[in-house]
Image 1 (tube, rainbow, N blue to C red):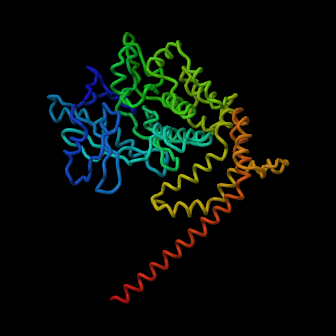
Image 2: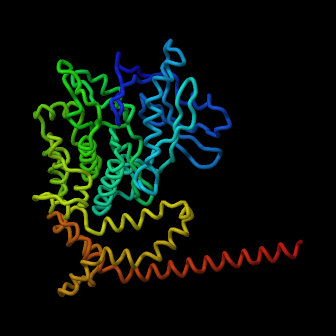
Image 3: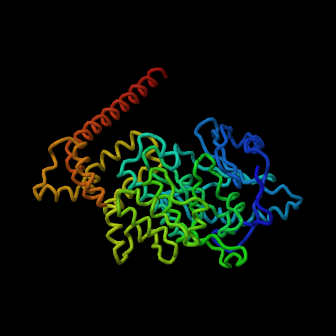
Length: 454
């Protein structure tokens, strides 16, 4: 395994405490094997990345899959007491994060849980997801234009949930954004154990902490330019992460979403950008929607004081100037209500697919009303959107999408398909009712049979 740069330290994301990072040449499967069988983890495969934290996929108690992360303790001559003092800030940070975060208040965030603290390593675990955002770019069905807006909105929501709790992520990138099979997004793997600031003239520090995703041809850089400093000047005294740093990283991820996986900064370009010797505008011009371009440009501004907050980018806090129209165009007004409706599906009571279908069936009219409110206005004005097929309507809307107003694309299409969708939902509703009746009948027959056999 790689060793950290000599004399390097990690600075807490939530305070000014500094501590060194452990390193180990031991492979992750050896750490899993060292765990007592009582923990129930069966090693499946090593995951990419992870010089500081080693990650692997495991099966938990012969049931579902989980991600197990190992933070090796230092292989030095330090006494046990010295080592525990070094590890203590990490554990305090994680405890503070987990105290604040839960699915009820943070439906877009998944935190890591400490499961074991051994003499060799710290062991963390979190739920397994089908895709991270980078993987999702390369799997069918590919994101539609609407999907991209919806995913971008969710990423900002997850960022806002962290910032409202006084937590800065510090390492937002597409590999740390998890996506379910139904396109719900979670932000994970807060980088509180990594340095806030890095020397611009020592790439080994950056490579060790932030350049672990070797499956990519072009290695992206998501770190805000103000996180780099010249060694001659020294690192800034204030070691805290800021929301503006996270918003820059979010802007890089949004660019990747709308550029279908292409990036706007690599490490060398970021260092040039910080010197005002490079511009991402040529890459951003490939995004057809001009309002999306303007939104991303605002997030990746060189001056952090000019970046807005996540709340402002979501349109939940007033903002002045042309950026207001940009935000209103990129994120339709119903996204907030739709988010609040769909986050209910995260409740454990919806673990069974039939319950999800029943909930959506019951809420479908509400969802239709949310999305189609403006479509009804189109019809009242005499716009006939009921003729022709959906593909033709979408094709004719392409020019409108290029002008940047997502509402004008979505509402006529949604309005024209509500009747067929309602018919489909009615069929689903009848199927759910039949399934419930059949289930009740089976239970009744089973109960009767048990009485008879007693």
